[in-house]
Image 1 (cartoon, helix red, strand yellow):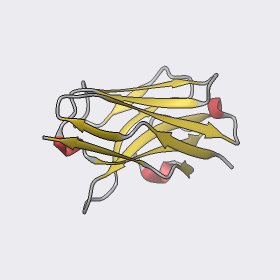
Image 2: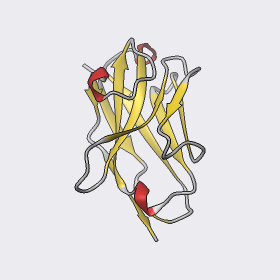
Image 3: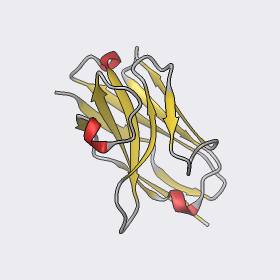
Length: 124
């Protein structure tokens, strides 16, 4: 059983930056592809970014491409989401998720474990 804990959310002005972290425990982190998803009020949860188990492959939603970066440190069992040039439409609860043995999938059903989420609010 893998536990995921997100941190780093908060309130930021449009154009600003935040870095989210997701710390994993209870499993072999390097065997999991990792993803970030988000859910805005009144909307369905959507894919944001994913990274392969070794970090060599990444995948982004079109809405964040060029502004967000995903990375991981397998020695620290942590995945990061660097968010730059934030927009009010990026406001959402951000979740990290772990996909055992998987690749960089955008499909929620591929992910085995989920964190509780961290709130990101971007003011205009």
